[in-house]
Image 1: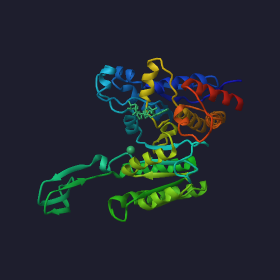
Image 2: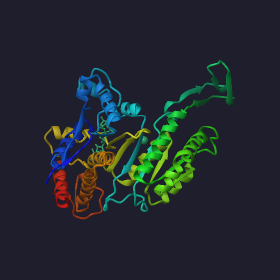
Image 3: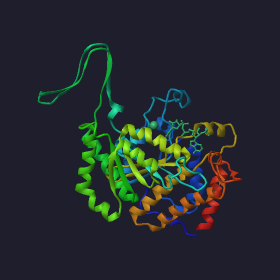
Image 4: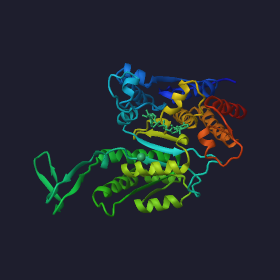
Length: 402
Ligand code: NAP
Ligand code: MG
């Protein structure tokens, strides 16, 4: 069979620990034999980030702006324990945070659904994709403990010196206050990424806030989304046969529980933090959750939602067998290859990506899986495979399909 050619390079961001091991196996077994990979490679493994004072992370994000599509392996976000382990010059910031700041993107997380791993919510049949606004609100709040009686106010001093005040509370005794903010630019970027991604994957977009109670703060989110939708997206959504749906956050939660899934749920920062954990848990396994960073300009960075699976890596280093699930990492590759194919008009690449996705699902549904899935599946008599044998089983399924 002749290998599939790629027109434009794909940005590859290598990573750390167990996922770095899986990364190489995936390339060796599932990609290189079938595709002549055209790659712009960046090593985001902590060792090389340290050697380059983290410049490599910035370079990889800039390359994503240049080529439009990236695929990223999970990476270590250093903490105190990593300083001696990797002999670090400093406690570098999270690479995901750095890349997101440069691309100004929104993260969309979606579960991979297979028969035999049923969501805890019985009626969820299709994925629910959560988009979390990753700026401001309670995550950038100023807070104060109020020791006793006194007046708390919000004060805004404009550049011309004029002052606007709003009473928070006239305290008669001790209490607490919090001041939150957000930025019109950031909310607009979020809205644009959400509308574009909904068009991209042709799914309805839901958005919810508490605008009835928060008549200025939350209402601004609602208005920015609605104004942008009316001005720029209404025709495109109708043409694509999808809907933008706004409701109150409590109504949204009730509807989500009753729904069958199959839409994108855009959430304010705190709602997204909480709901993404709930949705991920209900769909079964962190190892089956994909993640894509979408910028308002249309740059895409695909990855698995889980981390570097450190515990398995330490077993691997001791020479013990691991059974680490590579599906979300494979889907990161197929997501990126499909998008690359779409942007380049390279149909073969998209067809291959679809087949590799299908091969992963078919392999699991045939009862061949890693331990994390074996523990939760309703399929009887499964074969629990080690990390490498699972990837080889996927390759065997893929070869039957090609
Ligand atoms: P983790 O790597 O997501 O793993 C947590 C646990 O979840 C694992 O110990 C394992 O459970 C299970 N798990 C996750 N992915 C799995 C897979 N593919 N197959 C099988 N089981 C899987 O989180 P962590 O251990 O808290 O973090 C490790 C490192 O990852 C940290 O340095 C953190 O900074 C980094 N991290 C990176 C990203 C990213 O790059 N996007 C995201 C999150 C965390 P059992 O041990 O019970 O088998
Ligand atoms: Mg959370």
